[in-house]
Image 1 (cartoon, rainbow, N blue to C red):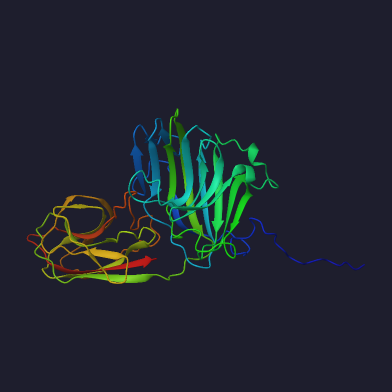
Image 2 (cartoon, helix red, strand yellow):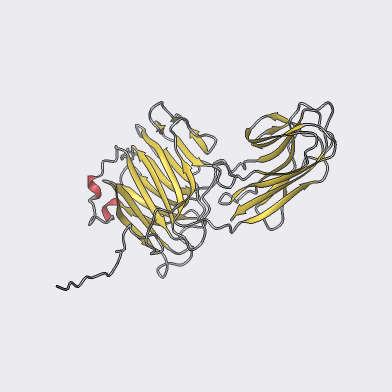
Length: 403
């Protein structure tokens, strides 16, 4: 007896393939992730609260409750860093939340987007987000403050699932995959019964001029604001992430900072020796210390620290490295740390040590970023001499960045 089998393999244009049409697999590379199991994660997120707004992390909630009450109130929570994008690779955004109900004159947004760094942070929107505006739910895409898309729920696809059956008061999970290249497509899903349900697909190429968002490197952002007379509202922030659906190749660029000789550094005091940060306007760049080198010139024991956002006794002078988004500071006089920041690496060294130290922060949750107000975060190579006298060093810091 003979059998004929049809061995043809095909995958429909569904969530089974990524935004570039490749068969989707589980080998994603995480670029940015936020969760709130234990805290507000203020080391990874920046918050703006106006009026009677509140941002609360309660025990057992594994989330943050954003609350507003009166006209003009807002609460915005945004990741300090953005997720780097590499051309030709599908990017995927996922976010969980609750309380996306319609409240009169209350705007709620969840997505990968940012805004201007002044005022109430409602202008200059760039990126995509799910919105509840008190009247409708909609999926939105903005480019440099101009709305490219606002697709209200009554126009969402319903062949896979009827959006009217979504209970927005309950916990929900949204998913967006997108090819940027400036002009690619964007697909918006809600994950229901464990299955991504496609509700809207936007195709930019061959239909519109320009780009659908100015910058592909985006932070994660949750916000709620009152736009008029209202009884207020709430939005629950749970967990979110951005991944690339493929490996993140080392297409980084580099910058190097050199301190040829410090002044004598008094012992038992932490001194800022070399610092770096991103220049204003480069919030989409991922940058971090790759490694450092030290040459000891005095023969004293000391402690090396990599510190984020320390407060120094004197404001340092920042200079731009040509053709890069990197700014650096090298104090011309002793500049000790007045208020310690986040000590993210420490190294012990004896009087005989001179050499290199690998920091390797590439996969760390910590990289250079900004507050919502556009204030750049600083990373410093610091030295704490612990010998009998002072200490002198030459130091070099090497920075990698994706732009």
